[in-house]
Length: 113
Figure 1 (cartoon, rainbow, N blue to C red):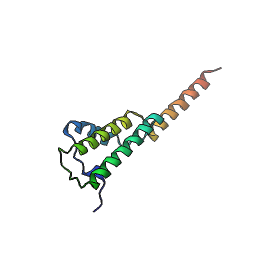
Figure 2 (figure 1 turned 135 degrees about the horizontal axis):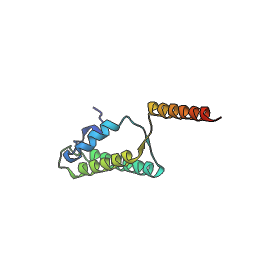
Figure 3 (figure 1 turned 45 degrees about the horizontal axis):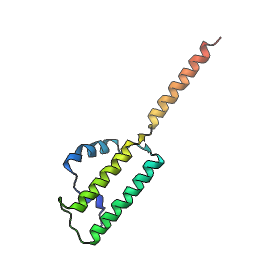
Figure 4 (figure 1 turned 90 degrees about the horizontal axis):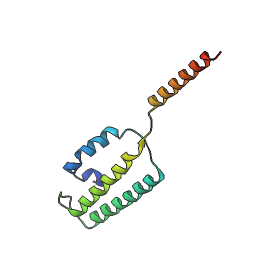
């Protein structure tokens, strides 16, 4: 059976509110800066490396395992960096701004003599 390592890790209780926020905001695309992108990439490589080493050594997934806690910490930092990036406006928000800008420009044109 092949599973993703991220689906097997337990969620730390004190991080539960972060996970709830992440689920709530996960459908929004983000404007990721080059610095944030590099940090996310490096963290992803570190997480993959630690998980691969853990599985290769035959570790079992238990709550008090230090390597798994390290992976969970890196994953939390990764999410924190991602959600610190500003969300991109949705299509509806872009239409709203465009229509209001269009309407405002028409008002200005009609007020001029």
